[in-house]
Amino acid sequence: MKTVFVTFLLFFSMFIGFAQEKSKQQIKQEKIIVKQNEIQALVDSKEYEFVASTAYPLGTRSIDLTTNPNYLRFKKDSIFSEMPYFGRAYAGIGFGKGGGLDFKGPIQDYSITKNKKSYTILAKVKDNSDYYSITLIVFLEGNASLTINSSNRNSINYRGRVDQIKVN
Image (cartoon, rainbow, N blue to C red; front, side):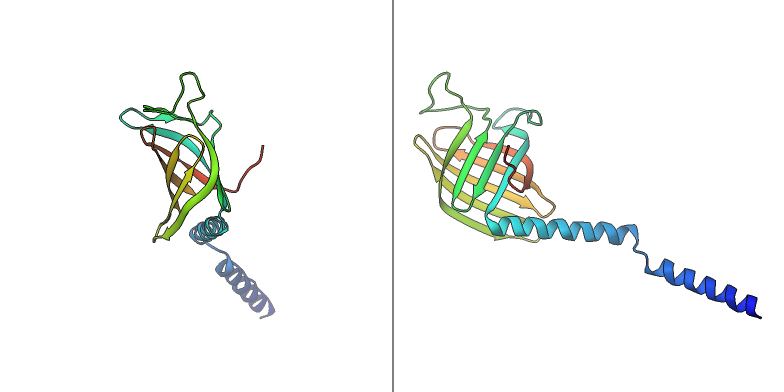
């Protein structure tokens, strides 16, 4: 009788232990929620950076940027950009001068719109030679799409990720 009771008790305790373990789907869902909360905190803080993995110039094929260091940083009330540019320049760009979208300046207009699956961030900034209109769509898992319109160049689109600012 003792043996039957002890055996029953062991099986019962094993089933309770298995019932308390989380499934792979529950663990995956918890990781997604944690990442969404991180992205929301970054966007709310106004201190984050976009790093592109691919550029999509107007009217041509995509360009891989994984080996090309680049960023667009938002720091409270300013934007800092060191993004490569591929496209047509109209004015204000001297021959042989860098050619990238390298600028910094205070944000003139800044707005955030939250949708079901993303944040749409609109910002404008002016530097010494150009005026930039920036549209950044940040998806809840951290992927992002960046479009930069310039008064002196064709617009360009980038795909990449938004994350905490990494200082080199």
